[in-house]
Length: 225
Length: 84
Image 1 (cartoon, each protein chain N blue to C red):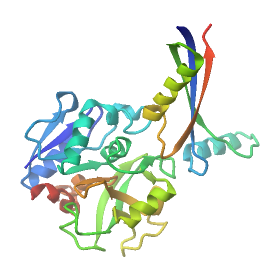
Image 2 (tube, each protein chain N blue to C red; image 1 turned 120 degrees about the vertical axis):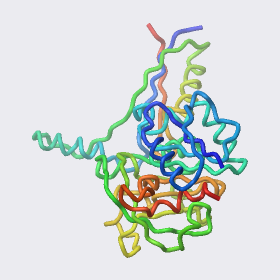
Image 3 (cartoon, each protein chain N blue to C red; image 1 turned 90 degrees about the horizontal axis):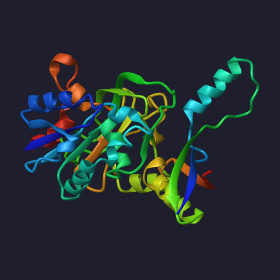
Image 4 (tube, chains in turn cyan, purple; image 1 turned 90 degrees about the vertical axis):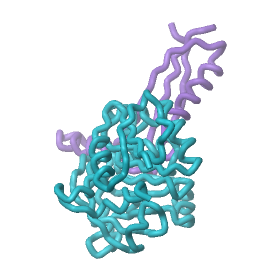
């Protein structure tokens, strides 16, 4: 498995993602977006950061770069694709996943640890956990509030495509545990296929034991299979 | 061909929370202004040549659909005026 971590101007979690994947024994390399997707790509990470300075809307510019056409094709063919933070915003903007991530309810940039509840454990991203497990991972975003049309939220829930919800330490998805005002406490969702996922929290920042917490490892283990 | 300016105004859909507008409103109130509500919008002024105003509006609408607005959270409107 060779994972391509796509780097746009302004991406800043690309090295973290490569480091975290390497720690898990996964071959990963950074790919500059203008160079296109390498032919040996078996997995794709769209990393966090501030691509294009968040111009217009976070992720709007990167979502319209030519490489994203290649990513959508690969995703449709079953290549695992994970969008983290800015990568999640790009994923929604490019139509890999439904909904949008927009300005936090606080109107502030928030950098803190949160708890997530695993909503289903039968996906590559959550196979290392049990349904209902609570994990602790960091968030660092100003535009992480999940918004979606009401009828589309119904579809998302009915199709069981919510992967992670913000919750308290006991696993209750309360409003108090919702850091950014996300609809239905949604922190991460699946795309049309279960091999495509986006999430605002950072599993790659909760993978290396030396930097505190390894709860995010399970998500990245999807690429280790 | 005629020169037009198409003005695209992008607003949050009714009911979508606008934390920046709320913060701006609170700042105005701190300055002593009285107001009932405040909404913000993005405005794009696009200069383009087109056969007629309808075509100019159509092209600007397509730009809004494909980039300027996000249909999940935004509504938009397009106004077209001949450029002087």
